[in-house]
Image 1 (cartoon, rainbow, N blue to C red):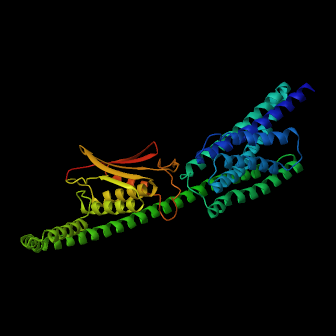
Image 2: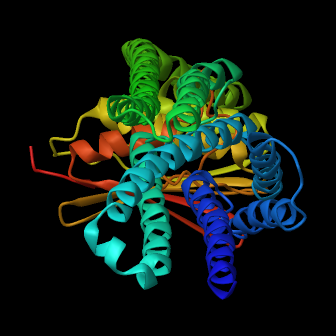
Image 3: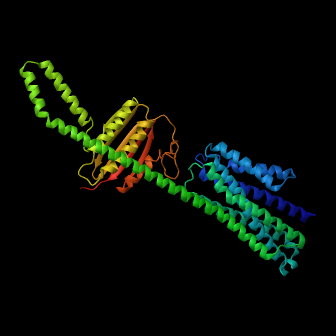
Length: 452
């Protein structure tokens, strides 16, 4: 009776330990995907608590349904902790649910075969007092095998899923859940026939065991491969979108160049007529028509200022871009201050600087509340551009890029501006940096320049 009690205690402890391990790995899989990771292991506690309640009260219910209820409770906690991207959380829960059963059955097959081999040895037949130790050892092997296999599965999925903060659509959710759902259908069939063979013959067929192990391994691999393919497609789409956005910006810059050409035509026209304008002013003053002369001079000055523009940066393309952004800022009742100077005498490409200015100033003007400041300066061969603006919105950060993840990073390409700035800066062995203090957003872009 004493030995039977020990066996019962060990059996209960093993079941409870397995619940705790499953909950731990469930939280471990979901943690890298959460922006708010605080309290993530509450998911483990809730799963473990639900399973423990069912176990203690010996509720007579299908074991799959019990696990489904426990995982659903964990899913609710996930949604409460991190209230966004719910489709992705459904995918993670469904995926882990299926992996849990694949891994459990693989560990079960290993456990049964090792246990059967060990109990048939002459050594165990001669040492009946070690049967409890053998049982405990087999329970530990089962738990260790399940832990190792689950950890490997989690690591593969986490590494394969590169863009963890990307929003998942319902169509993507359905596509990604197909391997898990079909895998579970095959799992049910294989498990049914395995139990049937064990009940009928007292053991399963060895070839059938190997086939089942292979099926579960392939099912796990299928989940990982589909995630990898999905991420590859998503990365290609993102790259294509960024390239299209970059091409659109290049087209915008070409439009700026055409505007510069018109500007210079206006300036040449004014310069060509300057002799006539001066002669007209001389005649007005000679005729003591001082008031008319002042009015004519003011009109001439306004025309020249309108043609030349208000900002002088040292490059006509950046002149036009800054002027447009200043006009947009004034339309939004924002103060716009510029101390930007183009790095003349260097190999820097005006198109590259224009991409930086377009993206940086568009974001600054859109999110500013009162002001936008831009300045540029050189320290030896380092060229630094700083764009500052006040803002009132809270920022969330993309863990992959290390950049703010705006709510507008959607299919129209808006929100990829900082990524494009980083790409351009990388061409000049530079990078960007973001600092936030007292509701002020400061973007600093570093370019390493070479003399022309």
